[in-house]
Length: 253
View 1: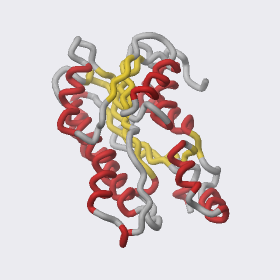
View 2 (view 1 turned 90 degrees about the vertical axis):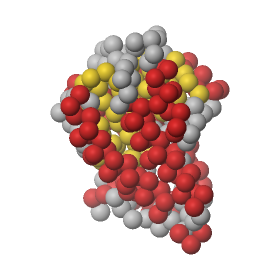
View 3 (view 1 turned 180 degrees about the vertical axis):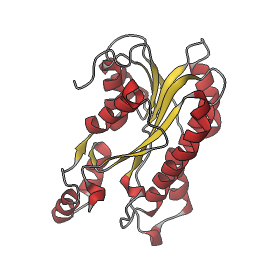
């Protein structure tokens, strides 16, 4: 492991989308670095699998559909009601959407924004409530290079990720008086279950071309998790309002 196993000792971090993919891998790595995890997702069975994979004690799982954003503030207050505030929030939950704009409907727009940008704002709103977040803590949102580079069929998804990147900068200003840092991770193509479903719909030539656009090839969930650990650790203490690229060189071309 690249990080010291006590670099996040004593910190409590909530991870959304923790039942699979980047969320689960990040929860695991954070726990290996000493953090206590509140793992959030919609699938109770998979959340229990995540819980079993975490190192150390003091972890918990919470089944929650983040698209119902009105209850997120109350949820965060309940999670921290025993005078045990969060020292970090990692928002990895979200859904992908590949659809030509001529076939796009308001329903798809609402679904993608609700799972990503809208829930991110609701988490930030909840984090601002008294007792939820400790001072000098951190919030990290998962975003994507799709918000920076145009790709056919990605209009809705790109818009949602661009919204997160813009939101990150304003939230960083708002939370700065408390020393709470807010950043996003703009990821390239990462090999997860979601990525595998996308690849299955493409021809071999299309997959090859997509891979070649990443100078270092496709990434792994661990590549993202390691950046998240850095941003939550003291190593990232002077970084806020940044959209951090972890994309294998995708945006260079």
